[in-house]
Amino acid sequence: MGMISEFKEFIARGNVIDLAVAVVIGAAFGKIVTALVDGIVMPVIAALTGGVSVDDWKYVVTPQQLDASGKEVVAELSIRYGLFLQSVIDFVLVAFVIFLVLKAYNRMRKPAAEAPAATPEDVLLLREIRDSLRAR
Image (cartoon, rainbow, N blue to C red; front, side, top):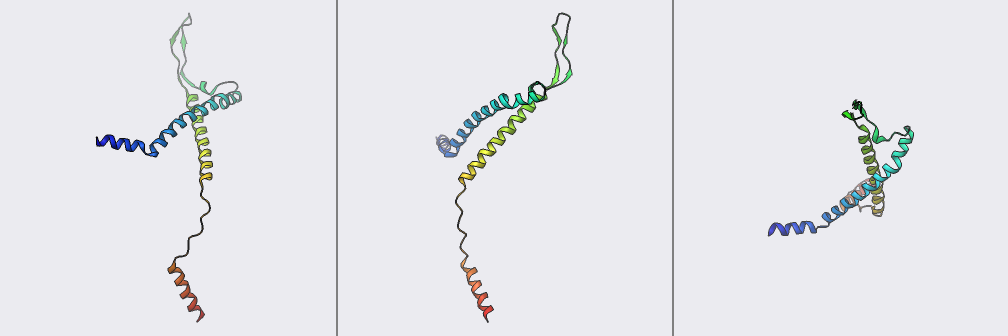
């Protein structure tokens, strides 16, 4: 029974619940950014590259071969670097937006300017001794 009660205590802590909420929100946010990339950013890039979608960018190692009837005999062997590039763009945009959100959050969370710490008593005493020695 000890392990179950420890597990309940672990789950009941605020940090675990906050982490679970963050994961769910992060997954939903990832979908939003992916929709932004797929719906807005990639069509602009495709327009700049002559209508070719980034997803279609590839290096063909072995081209597809068809027989006389048009049936595929040998499948195309290609390195699809466009998919990787799209994933990189997704990641960079997600990271940038999270950076902006955290920057705004930290700015709002920043405490008011703290008063300077009081000078320790021993330093004050040393200053008094120094000033009295100078006066002589």
